[in-house]
Length: 244
Image 1 (cartoon, rainbow, N blue to C red):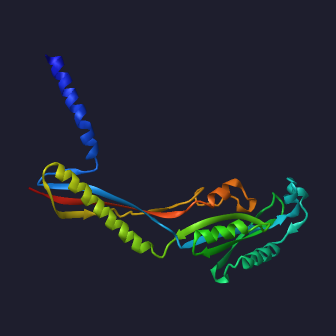
Image 2 (image 1 turned 135 degrees about the vertical axis):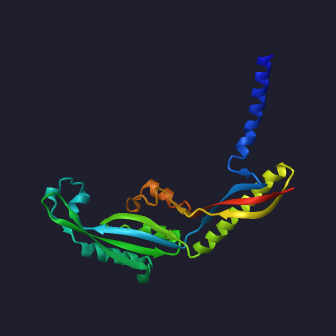
Image 3 (image 1 turned 90 degrees about the vertical axis):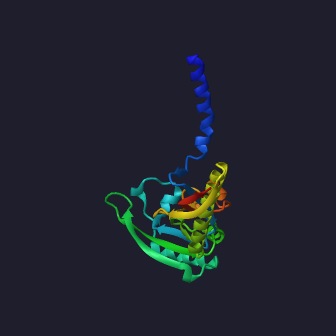
């Protein structure tokens, strides 16, 4: 008899598990209140795209397959590379107003040898397609790195507010469904708690890097065809009153 009772209780507990899983993120509180969490996810297409290009001095021997720095003799100065890059950007119709430059500094060619100077360009575009078009077309020798950095949108503040509203609406839908299952009605909002840290992430191939465009790698060609977006996340905790 006791063994049969044990199996009956075990069956009842197993049948309750799915119900617990459904209300895991919600809490019914004493006094006729229910607290739920609402979340939202929204994608925003960026209209402010920064393409960073770093150039540095190099030796012709480097491009000829020579791996011994001590034998390098024919150095290409930074000014010559800078001039070629500026000319290439002009041909690609990149406005001078959208170009900012920074002196990165110098680095050792080898221990005991002279420095190699470098410089960084910050190119601002209104779309990822335009930024990738320019990146794919740059073949100037002396480009050390080429990648998409900051992404933003002039509509970001407005979209953040819209994302918060969607999170609140999601919370109400969840609370209404749970209360309805109890044959009760959802009442007025008692409290809304919004976490201080509400962030977003930029969805990019290879962690925001364009993979070796100047080398025309297969990875870069595949990455250029993928849409990159800003993804907004919002979470709110809302407490509702439960009516009879």
